[in-house]
Image 1 (cartoon, helix red, strand yellow):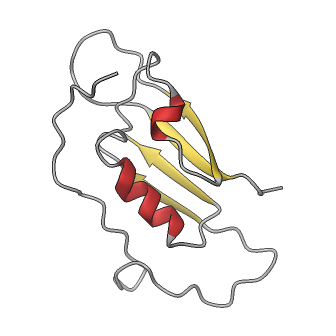
Image 2 (spheres, helix red, strand yellow):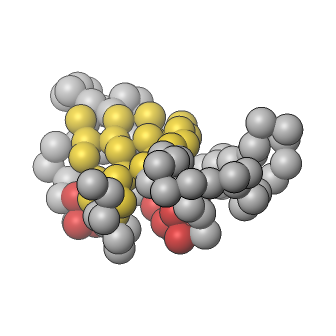
Length: 111
């Protein structure tokens, strides 16, 4: 299935609380810590490789993505990331306007 969306340059720039660019060292992680982040994806299809890099370079257990711009007919395998399961709620619009949709990538080994 061809991607018909026009992709803007990557807008994803994760930063820490002190505005240090990602990847940043996590302070005092323990076995009971849960590391979660959120990004506004503005098209998960367009920024899939950026999201995959963030997850491969990080210790995040979950990454929440708003504005996925995905539609129900698009198979999740297209935006799969090894080691993570994607749960999603797609935009529920029939017009061609971009926007909406949320998803969460959760580590496969999360118990």
